[in-house]
Length: 302
Image (cartoon, rainbow, N blue to C red; front, top):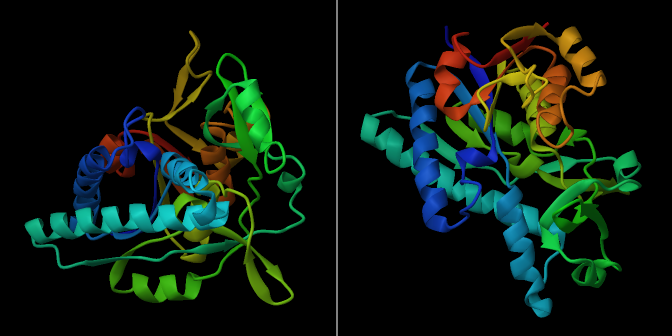
């Protein structure tokens, strides 16, 4: 059955954990393009969003290396959207051409509205950039909060407010009628509305929560979240680990409340499924097709 799928690509679909080079990202995106092409061949309508963690961290460091050209965090997020979008749309174009798939691809650099009064602004928790020693971290004290990660060092942390609206949603809807649209990259560029004017703000939006909002706005049939594990697990990485194959939103909500899914890994993905409130599939990129057919991964539904 043909479906409209909101596809959220995790970082492993773009790069490996240890290599953020252009060559490595290009190689990973070529693999990702093959999976997406398989879904398009089956007639599915695909809208794509993606993570940007390593890329935006690198861009931030490059900006800070030259104080005269330094850009704020929201602009760094915009740069990462364009960078990843360009590479992914080129990989998809080449794969589609090779297979004779007559489908256009475009990237929309997307702004996502957040509330300036979101509690996240008083309690920043989203880590960005590399680890630092205590002494090195002092250079950020006037601009960022820093947080100690035991055994690893200090990292800068920024607010991660909930997405409220997608500024370019009407354009995305129009483009999606004829093209595969890559949008809301890295959760989107966080902006606030001040006296009728949009304004960027120093924050990072969770990619999976933004994907859930995008899926709702586009009335998608399925939210497909591709990550670095094949499914959602209870008691992950313990002797009592158990794979969740098919569960309800109400049960997922209860597991989340129990602390079963860590905030920094599977938690936001399960929360995104709850927010979407329809059918969400969570799996690894190599099992995407089988997961959509109910043979792999985790399905969370009403």
